[in-house]
Amino acid sequence: METLRYVTIPSANYELGWRFTEAMPAEALVELSRLIPLDAMVARFAPHRTVTLPAFSIAATTVSFESVMGDPYDLDELTTLSALCASIDARLAERGLRLPTEDELEAAAGGSLFAWGMEIPDGIPYGEQTSFTDHHEPNAFGLTMNADPYQVEIARTALKLGDGGATICGGDPWPLAWLTLSPSYRLLEDMYEDCFTETLECARIRPVRL
Image 1: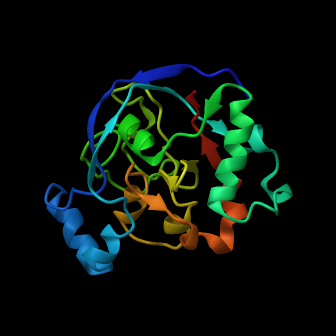
Image 2 (image 1 turned 120 degrees about the vertical axis):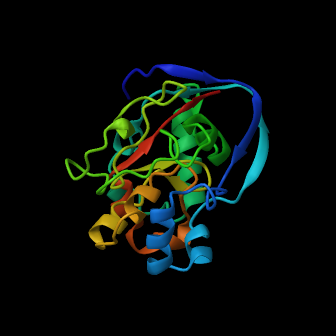
C-alpha cells in the first residue's frame, strides 16, 4: 500500500445525513419528483443526525481495495459487509490504521450535500460528460473525494460516495448520478448483494490512524 498523507479533522459537533430537501435547487427537486417518490429517494441516504466526534486523522486520498485485500474474487468467504470490514480492519491494524466510520467519512467530506457544497452540476459525473470540475478538487479539509460514481469508498457500515456505476449504467437521468456522490448517500448490504464482488473491484479505502 502506498504512502498516504493524513489530515486531522477537528473535534466538534457535526450535523450529518440527509437534510437537504428544502435547500436543493428547485430544478433538481422537480426532476426528482418525476423520477422517484421523495421518501424513496431520501431512504437511500443516511438519516439526519448530529454527532460529537473526537479529532481523528484520515487519509487525504484513497487506496484501492486490491492494494489492501488482494483480488476480491479470492474472498468468497467474506459474504457480508460486516465480515469484509472486520477483515479489512485486521489488515489495516498491522499498519496502525483502520476503516473510517460512516460518521467520520461524512464529517471529513464536509457535511454538505456534496464535498463542494450545494451545487448540482450539469450532465453526469463521468469523464467529460459534464462541464463541472470542482468535484476533482480537494475539499475544505484538503481531502480529495471520490469523483466517479463507478467507485465506492468503504466505511464500517456502508459503501459511500458512489453506487458502483448502477445509476449511470441504468440510464437514470439527471440529477440521480450526482446524488450518489453525496457523502450521505449509502449502499447497504441488501442493495448490492447480487454484485458485491463486482462492486469491490472499483472500491477505495481511506484509512484512519489508530
